[in-house]
Length: 247
Image (cartoon, rainbow, N blue to C red; front, side, top):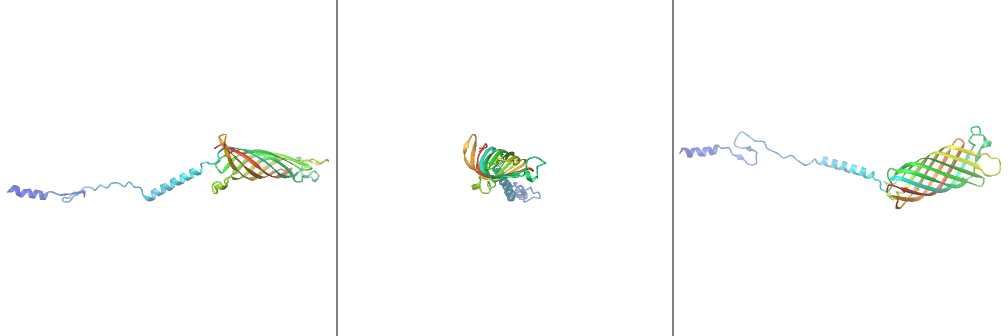
């Protein structure tokens, strides 16, 4: 009889465990509830990371040359018109009206050679040298120069269909002479000083060869040699053949 009464009491006094609740419902002690940490990054942070990655890939893509890279060798041949005027290259004769010569419009031509490096698809930089000769019935002028050349293809990125269009500038030192070929005692003129040339060209790819590719197209430029003794201005229309060593 004692055993029968005490057994239910023991059962009733035993605290029950609430399954899944993480605590004892019948007692004073409550255990901690464990929560698994979240492995999902915030949505905004994920989008920001992806945007930064896309921007970095786009920037790297822009730096990859597709048409122009490596060493650039180019030769331009052309013909045109020029005018020259000045004094003998003598300080005592410069400015003396009797020693002043001014030519008629002369016809002629010349060449320009370029050695450059294509930094990207749209800009090349290097050196140049060239020479031109013009003449008329009573006049003859020779001249040339050398210096730095900058060549840019401004539409390479914004309008690829006109990727071959380029604008260039030649800057350096030039030498020019003006000689009178008519009989008589006429003064000649000489000068050595600044050379400036600007122009535009267009090129089409001819195909791959010698580890690179060739390009050919027309060129139009304006050249000027300025010095204290002599000035000469000319315009040339010609063609340019170029080789790009980068592919």
